[in-house]
Length: 273
Image 1: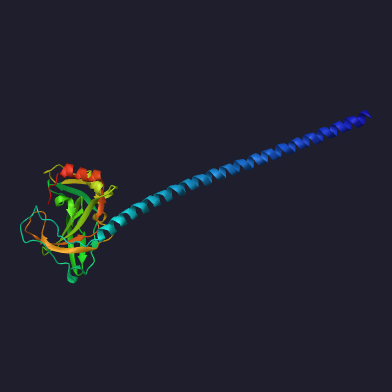
Image 2: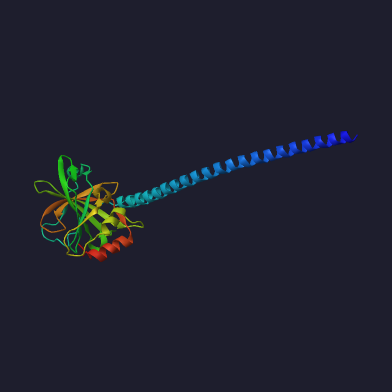
């Protein structure tokens, strides 16, 4: 009888040990699977965070483009009906509109190249020298880009609409014919990246030309997407004032922030032109 009881005790103990071992294995397996699951979930969360950041950046970019498009549509609602102001350069005949089928049938084919930043501040305008090889093609004619002049328009308006500044991209042919692409610059809620780069290096009034060799500027970044224009003929708004030029005044603006406008006025102190 004692032997039977001893045997039963041994068998029960063996069964209990087997059950405990099985439960321990099952719990270990579950813990291992849970750990793998958590690692996988963490990896997926990191991937989702990256996708969310990318989507947010795309949304921000789209919102900015929508704002610019809205500004462009507003600018197109009224046809340009006044030539560039010539207060600072009164010499020569008054500008006259030549926006005929002959003058406006060609698109502006821009072939600009980035170049080292070179600036002159004459107290009336800020002049950016263009890189060699930059050009504008109008039909069969090719004009070399010489410089970009940032000016303060008379009364802060162009065509009766508020304008912070204008940029005159001046071109010439080998024969001396001058063409100016005039870009209206309006105040907006956003800083303009390329103008921010230029404004950070505005030299003192009357100082020699400043060359900033580690900064490259692409004039293409100073233009709106839509290059529709109206054409005028008249004298340049910078010396020599008597020089005749053809102005291709763009109907669509680019935008700069209030801080950027104030910085230009403080450093250049440009009078109305």
